[in-house]
Length: 54
Image 1 (spheres, rainbow, N blue to C red):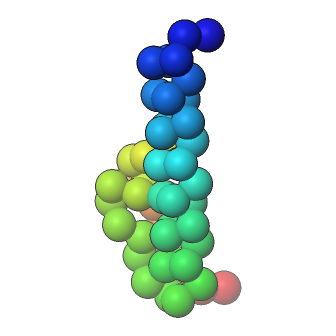
Image 2 (cartoon, rainbow, N blue to C red):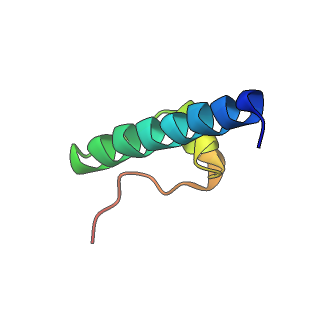
């Protein structure tokens, strides 16, 4: 693996971890996660459920 590819992988990993953390915090706070965070996680924002509980 070249240095450039390794840095790309590491950057992507941090982006996914950041998006997951932000999305989890939003859900725990009964808010909808940001569309960009959902896209980063591979989730279609339009198909993400609303704030329905139960």
